[in-house]
Length: 204
Picture 1 (cartoon, rainbow, N blue to C red):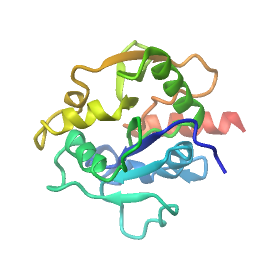
Picture 2: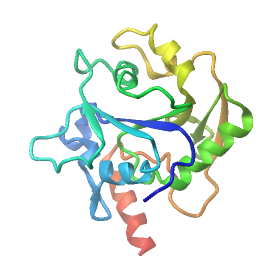
Picture 3: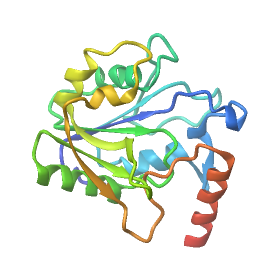
Picture 4: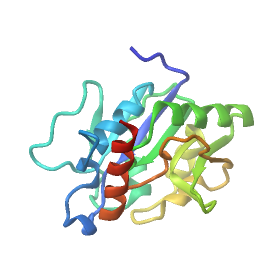
């Protein structure tokens, strides 16, 4: 049983058309013998609540006990609106919320702990996000003060960009310096998926 390192919830966004994969949901792609969603839920096991927002294909394996799945209304309204729907299902008492794209096969408990450590060290009004090798902030791979995100989410409309969720929130940016694959790495293309599978094979 994983102990909770702190009061944070996790929202995983699995919506999107995934046109580069012929419409197949990226969260259901298999890396290292498990779907990306399965890997992410395992990485988020320490969260006090895990909420998956979006549609899963018919015939998908059941989610682990305690994981909630829902669909934003109207469907297809973008990541910010999906986060708003997910926040409505997060119980009170959580100080922070991890907001995560659903195609991150290397999102681990170690990565989440690093996000939490950096945000906690900076202060309760700070969020923390990973940046890629080019220094770009990966907004859907971060941990945020939940009250401030709720405040911003109350003002958004369907179709608004995700970055509006983080308006006015101070941010700690983190570069992944571990030898393991970076948690911000997303499987956005077939080439990305092949790279993820190669990394997993090399780790064996």
